[in-house]
Amino acid sequence: MKREPIQQISAHWDTPLSSEEVLTAVSGAFEGEKVTTDASSGIVEVRSGSNFKYRMWGESWNGYKNLPVALALEARDTPEGSTVDVRAFDTFGFRMTDHLFMGADVTLKSKLVHLMEVASSTLKPHNPGWS
Image (tube, rainbow, N blue to C red; front, side):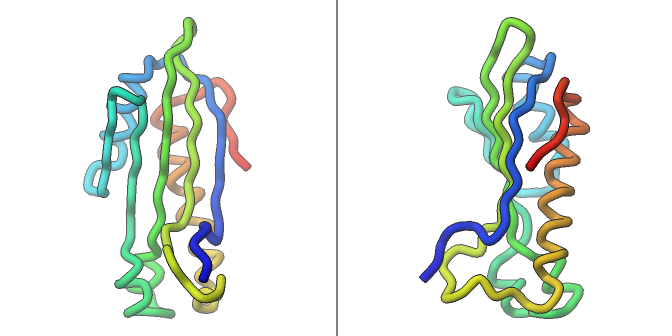
């Protein structure tokens, strides 16, 4: 059985915001999603979608809308603001293969890019971009 993400995107950004401001800004940007913030360690995690709903609805608009994804972000203060490590990834969990319904891989990639775009536009990093 497999557990690693099928797709993921990561980045390292520098922003003029303090780590506390980063956590507040990202939490606010993803209002309505499942957001967990741990201010003591400078970590925020955003979860969207539902593994169960995706598997139930399959190759339909409802299925693709519920692709399970997450954004994990860690901010550390620096003299110029803060440095941010961010990663967007799927949260499919245990599975037998990396098979997705036809076209889901493209939709998954676009959902991950969307998470990164929202985080980037919120934080206005000096070095935007991801891989």
